[in-house]
Length: 220
Image (cartoon, rainbow, N blue to C red; front, side):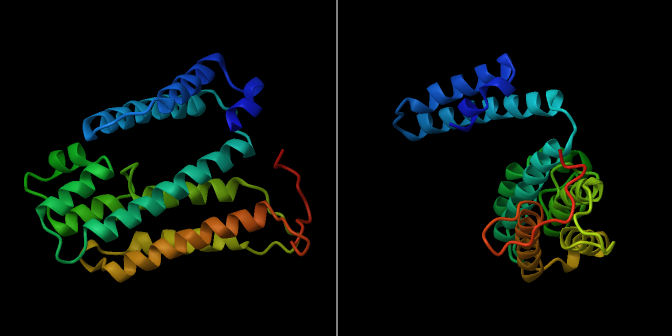
C-alpha cells in the first residue's frame, strides 16, 4: 500500500521487485518446506529492494532517516538475539543459531578455528566495530547520521537523540565480551528502544502538546 502511494518515486526495477513480492505473498502455501522456501524467496526480494534503495536514493535527510530506522531495528534485533541465544550457559547449538541469525558464520569460522565459544560470539555480534552486522557498528552509524542532522533548537546544547547515541557508543567501545552479561544486554536493548522513541519524538513531533522544533532548515 505504501509503495502504491509512492509509485512515482520508485524506479521501474524497484516497482517490479515489490509487485513480484506482493504476488508471491498472496499465494497460500502449506507445509514447513513450502513456508521456508517462500520466506527465503521473499528475503531475497527484500534484499534486492534494499540494494536498489542504497544505490539509487539521494543522500538527503530522508535517506538518513531511512537508514536510521534500518540500523536501529538491526541493533535491537541483534541485541535481543544475543540475549536469547548467547546467555551465560549457552551451548554450541545456541551459539551456532545466533551466528546464523546475525549472518556471521563465515566471519567466525575464518577468525576462530574452534566451535562457537560464548565470549568470541558475543564480541562478534555485539562489540566488533568492524563487523557490519554487530550492534557496535549500527550504533556508530547512528551517531554519524544523528550528528549530520541539523539541530532543531537554538540553545546549542547536545540534543537527546545524540546524547543517548553517544552514551551507547562509549559503553560499547569500553565493554569487554567476557563481562557482557544478559542483564547488560537487556539494558542495551532498552537503551536502543529509548533512542528510537527519542528520535521519533524529536524529529517527528505530533499531538496537541508536542514541542515544535525552532528550525527545520536542512531537513528538506
